[in-house]
Length: 323
Image (tube, rainbow, N blue to C red; front, side, top):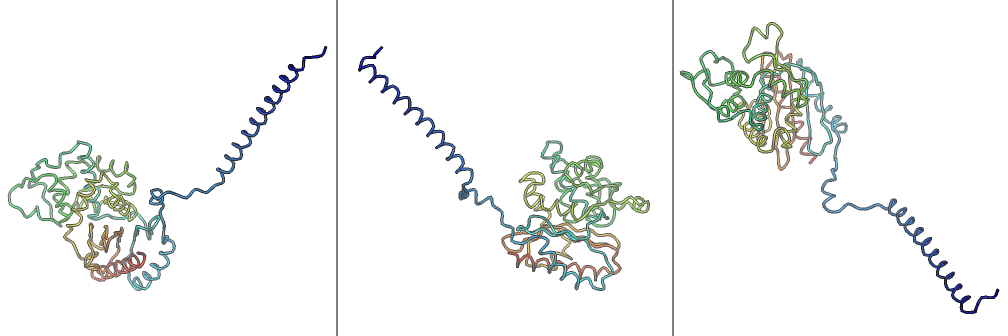
């Protein structure tokens, strides 16, 4: 049967439309496939905001370790004491740590008591303005000023914490240990990753020392505590700023401050027979860095302090050249 001429024209028109649609569909699929393929291989430069998050490490601890090792080797020649050190410059991706081992903390343990108190205050578990009576039975010798005061002075927890650091007051420290408890301070250390730090005795507890019960830590734990404080990531930005201000008021200036009188230093020292420690944040110029030096088995206090000051100067020279 022969179709009318108009029907053939209509059929042809429909066929052409269908073919066009098919070609359009196939072309679209190929286009989007190529677009996705190209975008997956295209490097996109970071925006200005993104570039601010890119950290450029100018030196690594491994590179600087060789330089400092050469400096230390000459400084420690003939020195019978043992030294441990932690250094962290702001341009480094990680610290340089030498001789890291668990050892007697002396009064450096007090920084962990300080941050325990500020963490408890942050959580509403402690009022820093709470008044505490320091009783005669609490007073002990060694470093500090409270044991020389008449009567039974009443101080706020904030004042006791300040004396514990600035004067390394042993009486204030023992009162704070009683108020916070051994368990709470140790829990703070363990929970926050300071797992090599152990509080086992109060200050001036000679009986505990003779029985081998001492307070312990490492330069790595102390260095990490200082690193977080400097970064305002220890307790909270406001609490960290307050604690750093207390450390700036440290009255023992025999080591870091004597070596670097031009620097602003937030630090805590510790001393027992045969050992001297200094640990802190050193600001020389616009930037700061963390430095911790522990000494032990020292037979000559003056010589050990002289060596530590020279080590501090060497580190600071490397820091200034690094910046």
